[in-house]
Image 1 (cartoon, rainbow, N blue to C red):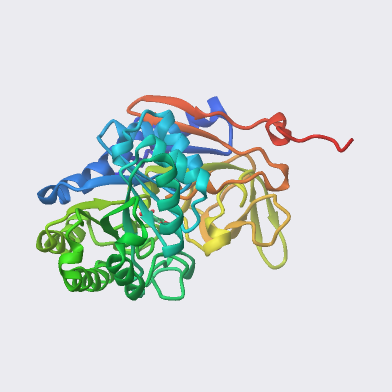
Image 2: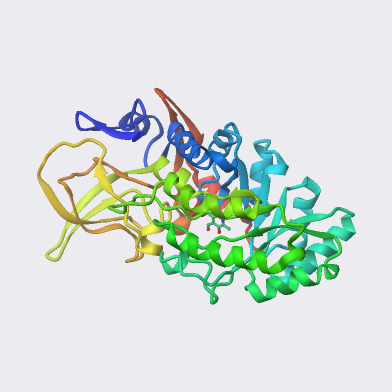
Length: 415
Ligand SMILES: Cc1ncc(COP(=O)(O)O)c(C=O)c1O
């Protein structure tokens, strides 16, 4: 089901006209469909039901409390990558025994916070981290459960910035080092190695890179022999891709049919960390045309949203479908859709054909629910946009638009 759809030329989120949301809360604004979040989570739950995985939604994709709370209500756990994300999931009353914590750079105080809260496990990314974690755990007299994040050196065939399991990437430990860790458990006396974690990248649209990685992981675990006795969990990370343009990503069922056999053969409890799959197409970004600037070279549709609000096009040259919220004409124009920020990299689309638009028209930028607001900044001293959540015919502000006061919060003059 598409939770964002046009009815008589007007865009709706569930049963609410998007125009109505903008008249209440202004633009630019992120709009999330609660039913879509649920639907996507449940697609995974259904597809993998045979092995009843622990689904730990990846908070980094969209960390709004209302999004986290919606997923918690479905039984979701959480994948966090910072103390700030731990704070967020604590605030919604998440169950610490459903929280996993990855990051190549966890500081002592971050580890303490997670240990004191009693999270399910740390996804450990180096021997140095393991040593530090063991020391911190010993000081607190709390055993740390960990999964070793292995880097199986596979190409996820996605954008360079979001591939994470090639040997030149900073993530995880190579299989040789992982084997050394399993061979010397006494070096980490306060650590209990309960899992293997592998996350190969993001926006992966077909299952074969997973199979390549899991082949290596299975061989690795089998090669450990009795040293693998303590293992209880296989965490396959996140990465399932979505449609932004014309991709045809494998469905949750196809992913499940490829992954489940490994889980069953290894006899481990499966954990997964989907982010984009759940949030990506559950949100749009809406902005208003300020003016249309025509030059001899190009038409620029200048909007009130910018790269500071949604950076994916600038950062990854990511494609987002853009369409008027209200379709007024079938005449089209070719244009760059750009924001007001002082960077040539500030664009949402280049040489895009869209229906003719004019000042004050609203544009929807689709597939903006993941890695959208979470990457927003105040660059050019632009207050960050509002976020609104819709369910059926109800909608509610889930983060107010920032004010000028928010821009300078915490700043002091030099005296
Ligand atoms: C360790 C880990 N798990 C899960 C995810 C979520 O990935 P995705 O949003 O592609 O599902 C990421 C994303 O970077 C990650 O680094």
